[in-house]
Amino acid sequence: MKRVVQKRYDIAVIGGGPGGIPAAIAAARRGKKVILVERNGFLGGTATSGLGILGYLDRSGNKALGGIAQELIDRLLEMHGALGHFRCPVHNSISPISPDCFKIVAVEMCKEAGVDILFNNELLDVAVENGRVVSVTVYGKCTSTILEAEVFIDATGDGDLAYMAGAEFVAGQDGTGIMQPATLMFTVVNYDLEKFLKYAEEHPNDFGIKEDYAKGYDPAFFRATPGHCFIGLTDMVKKAKEAGDFDVPRNQFIYITTPTNGALAINTSRIINIDASDIYELSDGLTLGYQQVHTLIKFMNKYMPGFENAQISYIAPSLGIRETRHFVGEYRLTVENMRSDYVKEHAIAQSAYNIDIHSGTRDHIDLTPVDEPFGIPYGCMIPKTLDGVILSGRNICLDTVTYASARVMGPILEMAEAAGEAAVISLEDGVKVRDVSVPKLRERLRANGSLF
Image 1 (cartoon, rainbow, N blue to C red):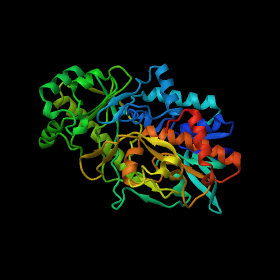
Image 2: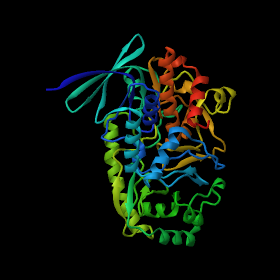
Image 3: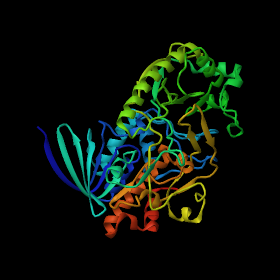
Image 4: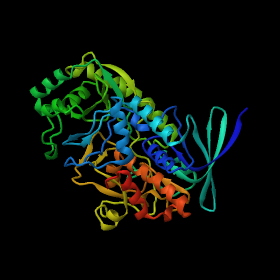
């Protein structure tokens, strides 16, 4: 037997990851009645995977993100759950965070703002009247909850709400439909990083990135930089593949430092040729991810100096998904218009990360440095064929190139705050979300500390 509950809110945020948390906080701080629905028993989404956050600094070291995005880091620093922001020749910057501390801080900030949180609930249905979403049904623990709201924020990552409501979308990359691969992150302990760096000094040709933009990406940099992400070991990986010890479709090894003493996050698993918005392909991908984690720890123990006794200490609770659906929005940001006056005048967030395209069919990464941040216009967040919904996260309207930069957590945190503020303005002014005053939205965000 199941029960049915009906509730009404001003704003309903579906998805409690980086695309949802700041949206809910921003809206609730304005006095609106807000609910945040999360499918898991924790908040954070990708921020609980072990990944550091990209995008806080631009390539010159200038701060690119403020507002709630920076508040989260400040709160994490207070409980030793972050290390701060560190420049990087390859990634522009990286800001390591503790997955478990992030869960705590996200809940605390939501509750302080007055957000209602509904955990362990999956989106089940969406009701649309005259082209506008009027309610959603979520389900958990034998209970169906019908949520009515004036504005819905789709922070599901894959855009499940917009998809179920019939919004127009495209899947994967322009022209091919190929999607960037997924990753199952895991964390290791019991290693000797200094031994590894000494090996690197003795084998410079097999260490780091060799492109011109990566100058200074060497053992001295890693020793001097507590927050860093290492990419390299191309020859070692090739040797292991030839010996049958490495069947992951990746040509290099990646680790990321964390705030937890002695813990390194491993970002080397690679699940290609899947559409993670399909539950069966997602399940197959997760199965393969666990197998790859086993392969990788054995590789580390056998091949990597200093990691002979490394042990798994944590496996991310879900796959890290880089790409699925892109919804057709009121505006489409492209490589051709990303520096236009229109974008500069309508930006409500910005991306300071590089263009980073992981091949969805092969083993390599195509990375193009971005010297200065580019703006993300509000229209990218508004579904062209649907009312009452604001998109927040990697489901917004971008081309393949701009998406490859803006898909990471830093820009998403900032656009999420914009989504929450836009929802509030829509209610205050009695207008559709597509008609929200962008100058007014930009003014509020800048007053909150945004730096676009």
